[in-house]
Image 1 (spheres, one colour):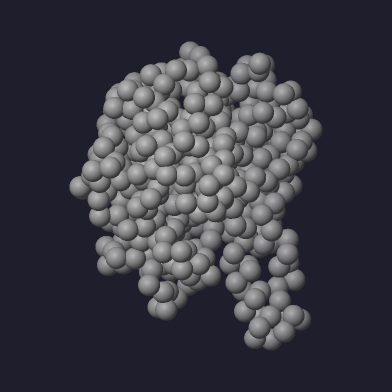
Image 2 (cartoon, rainbow, N blue to C red; image 1 turned 30 degrees about the vertical axis):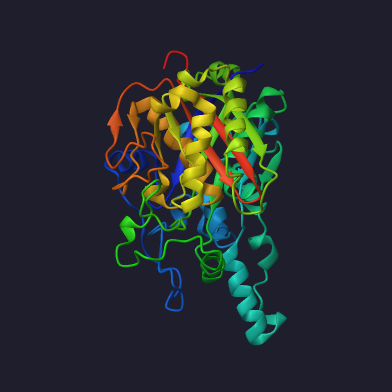
Length: 418
C-alpha cells in the first residue's frame, strides 16, 4: 500500500492567516472570538463569532477572479496557494508544475456560499428575480470551492466535494488518502473550508439552542470545551488545506515530508440527525478504524485533537468515545480542543485541526484548551487546560463529529527521518 505524506499546508483562520502565525497563536492560547462585524446582530441573542478579520483575498488570488468567488471559496483558494507553495508544486505561472492529470482536489464544505444566498434572497424579495446576483448559483453551491481550486491552479485530476456537515474536512482528507493509495492520483489537495457567519446561519443555530449566548460581553471566554460553565459552541470560519502526496512521488522530486498521513476511519451513528449517540460508540469505532488503518495501537498516540465543540452534549459523549477507544491509555493521552481558540469552523474545522496535528508533531507541542477553568465532572481526562505544553509527539489523531451522525478520524505520524 502506498505511503501518503503531507508536503504542504495552508491556513486561513480566526487566529491566523498563515501556518507560521497559526502555530504561534496555538502555542500562545490566542482567542479569535469577538463581536460579529459581518452583519448587524442587533436582533440576535448571539452577538459573537470567530471571524477571519482583515481578510484580503488579493494577497493570494487575482482580484478579478476573487470577485467571482464566495467567501468560503476564497478561503480555500488562499489556503491552497499557501500549501502548494510550501510543497514546491507551483510554477511561475501559478499552475501546478507536475503532471496535472495526476493531481486532484477533495474539499470538505458543509454549507456553501451562505452570504450569497442571503443577499440573493433579499434582492429577490425586495425587487424581484431580475435583481438577483447573476452568479448566484455558481457562487453558492458547495462544489465551487473545489472547482475553483482546480481552475486556479490547473489541477486536472478528480475534483470532489465532501459534504458531511462538521465532519466534511476530515472525511475529505480520508477520501484523498484513498485516491493516492489506489494509484488514481499522485497529489491531492485536501482539507475543509467554511464561511457561514451570516444572520441566517446564526439564527438557525440559535433556534437549535446550539450557540453560546451568555458571554457576549466576554467573547474571548465563550468557547470553553469540557468546562462546567460551557453553554454552546461559537460559530467560526476558515480553511485548513493540506497537500497530500505519495511518498514515492515526493521523494522523486526531492520534496521532504512534513508528516505521514497514516490512517483514516469513518463511521455513522445511525441514531439522530443532530445529537451524537450517547455512548460514543460510533466515534470510538471511527478511532479504532483509523488506528488499524495506520497500523498503530492506542498507546502509540500522544496527542488527540478533539472535536470539542463546547456544547453540553458533545463534550461528554466525546470523552466517553475517547475512553472507549483508547482504554487505559486515555488517562495518559494529551487531548485538546483548538475550537476553544478558533470557534467551530464547521467543515473548515477538520482541515484546520489536521494542520494543528501536523504542527504539534513537527514542533513538539500540545495545543491548549483555553477557558477550561472548572472541568465538567463527566469530562475527566487531560485536556491540556489553558497553557500549551511541550514534548515529543510521534503520532497524533484528530476527530470530527457532524450532524447526521457522521464520525471521522485522521491519524498522522512523524515522517521517516523527521
